[in-house]
Image (spheres, one colour):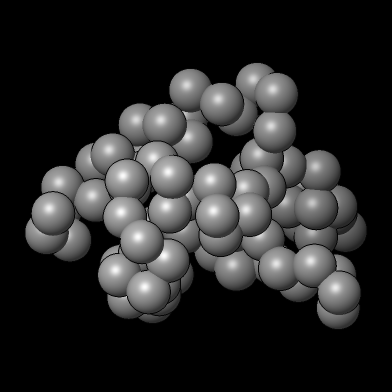
Length: 79
């Protein structure tokens, strides 16, 4: 699977799931891509670099989501 295929697959799946959740664990993304973690990591990192996904960390938990989604995003844009 190349980068563009992965990008389409991830954005379609995460968009479908946005009604119920906005942040996803790395393992969720690897399952969507149907790849082993080591292979998926390269693509997920590239998606973050290109702004397709954003990385979020609470300090103990690392998650990924689409930019501008979820409660955290709305709180960050308040004046």
